[in-house]
Length: 455
Image (cartoon, rainbow, N blue to C red):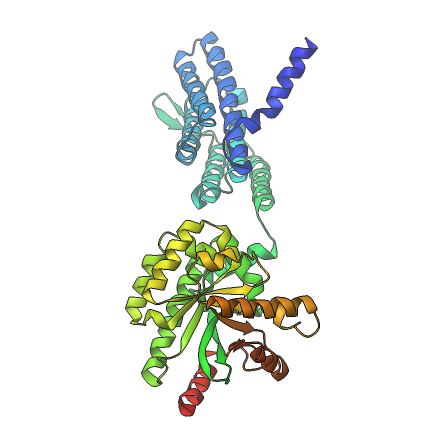
């Protein structure tokens, strides 16, 4: 007997691991299973109870609720979970409303039925918090309003008409019903919420484009003669309260949340728009503009089509663009990435590996993908005189790039000494504070004027 009990307990404890999906989905499916079993147990008991009291119509209603419980329990093991969620939640609410209205044979315990709405309200707010805004926010409020309506009116359907059953001392009764359930729901919402600084950044960042808080700065790139050859477009977020927020803070949040897709589209469009505006004023057709492309952007199914449409809209020649990707890009779907890179390379767009030497370094990627430039990471350049390992990596990267016919750009150059040293080693492209910090468009235009005058 004890062995049977232990075996049953073990199977019950391991039940969540047999359900489909990741951890949040397993929790949701387990909750559906609990709701289904609860509906079956309560429905069967109340059906038998009403049959014994000669109330066959009400008993049939509870039989229906038991069948609904079977459907809910089965949904925990089936595909189409999201579709089933909409059906299940509304079926439960509709069933409870029908029971409240029609089951009028237990006057003494009538108000105990409303406890099911409390469970549905709190359960929906807690379990569905990762679902759509309607299921996670609006549906629990609908359940709360329904609960408050019934406890305050006692509405039932009797003798062919609706009958109100407002409780005596209604004020006392309503306060003691409304305050606890409202506090419970608010507690559930509070516990299920995310109040970290990261979550705040994500919510504010989602509105930053519409509120025109994002800006592009342009950092000049120069050759070995310190002549301007192009700019790197760098994203900046000017928060109305916090001021400028570092890209090192909000870019990882944007990538994790998927906001980087829309932000990346905006960066590309704004860069091309700025190039078009400068084209009308200055002879800059020889300048190349570098744009950082996130791996998520590159993997997005619409990246190629939308980028081509944007290029066509602003009539910018592809040869004037350089897309910068990090080494970590190559840990994703390499065949797909290779096709995208090859497609744009054939159009004339150049590709550069950014932050080379500090990420997912693989020399094989230099031969497998149509890469034009290598950008040596500034963390290596800045320590070239004090760290022998960094110096070796930088020198060998320059040598390797030259042997493979690739351009190499040193970023993070902050002194004339560093510039001269790298130039003597064969590096011919440079970027860093020694030449200029990232500049707003108005100050970048000054560089363009000087470049045009020098030419």
